[in-house]
Image 1 (cartoon, rainbow, N blue to C red):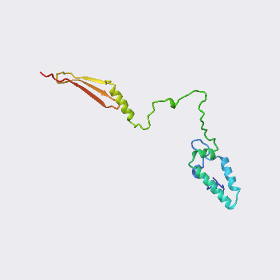
Image 2: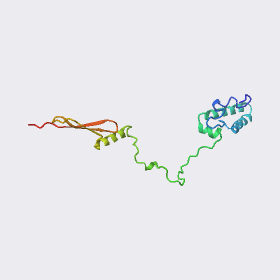
Image 3: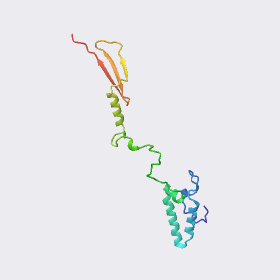
Image 4: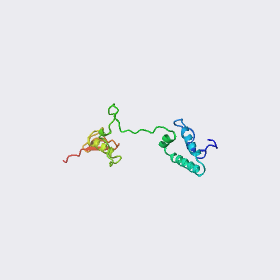
Length: 163
C-alpha cells in the first residue's frame, strides 16, 4: 500500500495481500475503494473518527473467518438448510442406529462386556492334553481367551479314590 493511501496505517498486516487458500485478495478491491471514499469524504475530527471506525471494524474481523469472507471478500455466506430431502431417499439415518453407547458408560465398559460374553459362551479357544495320565495328574487343561487378551485357564483334576 502506498504511503499516500488513506488506508495505509489502518489495515492490519495479516489482512493485506493474497489469501493462500483461495488465491484471491484478502480484502476485495471494491471494499477497499469504499473505505477510501468513506474516509476521504470527511475532514478534521470526523475524518479521524471514521479512520478509527474502519480500524476497529478491521480489527474485529481479524479472527472472524466467516466475517472476512462475507464482508471483506464479498463472498456469499454459507447456506444452512433444514431441507434434507432432495428426492434421493435416505442416505443415512442416525435415528435408526440402536447400538449407541450410553453417555454414562465408561470407555472400556463395552470391551469388558464383550469379553464377559465370550467367556460365558463356553467357547474353547485351545485345548492342551496332558501326555501322562496318572490318578493324581491333570487330565486336561482348557484355555479360554477373552477379547481383552486375558486367558482363563480351567483344569480338571482326577483325585485318587479312597481304598
